[in-house]
Every structure is written in structure tokens, then in C-alpha cells.
Image (cartoon, rainbow, N blue to C red; front, side, top):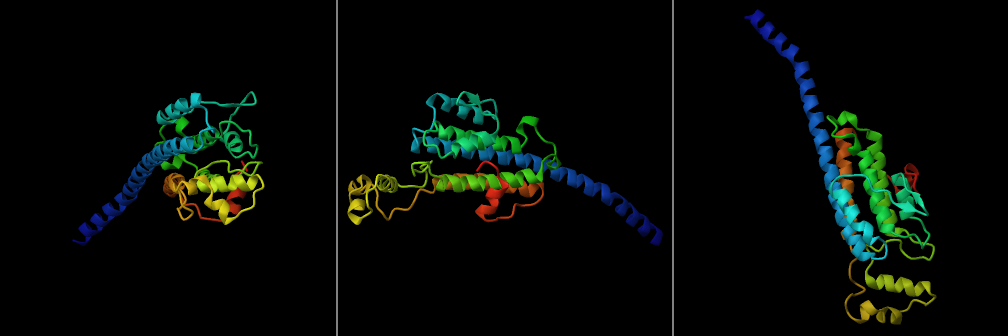
Length: 253
């Protein structure tokens, strides 16, 4: 009986390593599929973001390019190359630098922003290299950098202003806040009377007590959530650090 027990124990021990290896391969393969899902959901949120951004910033995009950009993202392609000053933009950094350039005459700022984010996601998820079989094909540091890029982008969208002191993108601001800022920029002194006479307040379409619009930030936060999940599947979840530390990691600012 002892010999039979020893033999059974030997067989179990002998099979343990291959089974664990097989389980690891299955988990890695499942993880790679999950990463593709994270990419697709991020792009879906980015499409919604552009739709809202174009409505809120109607002078910041090309109507001719709009449908091509949507088609590009919906069909998971990466063929569009925009031009600026006669030169084609090449990297996602090129697009993002223009999106956040303080020059108030930058055209199609919305398009630069969205394509910059899309190309950043495309490159990080290796979409152009086809379906990756396991998570081992992905770079942990690249996803950490992607996470920091997106956090900085979210912060810049919220706070960035051009050389005339106007917000680069209108997202969270209520109409009365935009009106108020524009009056300050032309030298008017702030007062309660000025607030009461803002068209959005006077017509009672808005109130000073109205909360800001969080729809844009929610969509970006959902993209960041999927990226963070992907990083966790690959290796280690990015550590949340201060915005200054995040900026030091990325290069487009």
C-alpha cells in the first residue's frame, strides 16, 4: 500500500508542473484577448468623446475630415495623416503637441487631440501587428507611460489655455463661465452686476449654482480605467502619482 501511495504521489508531482504551465498559457492567452477588449472599449469612448467635443467646440474640427476620422476609428484602421503648415504629422506626439499648442490660430484642434489619443492607443496596444497571442507580447512600461499620458491629457484639457487666455477646449465649463471669462479678458472688472447680466444667467438657462459638465471627464476616465486594467493584466498596475511627476514621464508638453 505504501508503494502504491508513493507511486500516486510521484505521478501527481510529475504532472503538476506541466499543468501549471498550461494554465499559465491559457491565462496569458485570455489576458491578450482582454487587452483587445480594453482597446475596443477605449476607442468606443473616444468616438463618443469626439462627438461631444465637436458639438461643444464647433470651430475646432474639419467637417470634411470628421466622417473619415469616425470611420477610421470604427473600422480599427490607422491610415489618416493630417497636415500642418504643409507637412504631414507622423507621430502621436506631433498631434498632441498641436492639440495643446498655446497658439490661438491652431486649426482643427479637436481632430489633432482625438487622432493623437487614438494613435497613442493604437501603438501601445500593437494593433498594427495583429492579434497578440499572449500578454507576454506587450510592454509593461509602455502601458505605464500610456496611463500617465492619458492622465496628463485629461488635466491639460481641463486647464489648458491659449495665448489669449481662452480655454483650448470647452468641456466642463458652463456657458456663463465662458461668458464671464471673455468679459474679464477684454478688461471688464468682475462684479455681481456683471454676473447677473450674463446672457445665460439673465435668460435663466443657467444658474451660478449649476454644477460643471462632467461628461467629458467621465469618458476619459473610462478610457483610463481600461488602460489601467490592461496594465494590470500585463504586469503591474500603474502607481498614482502627482501630475508634475506624470508630466516628467511624457514628452509632448
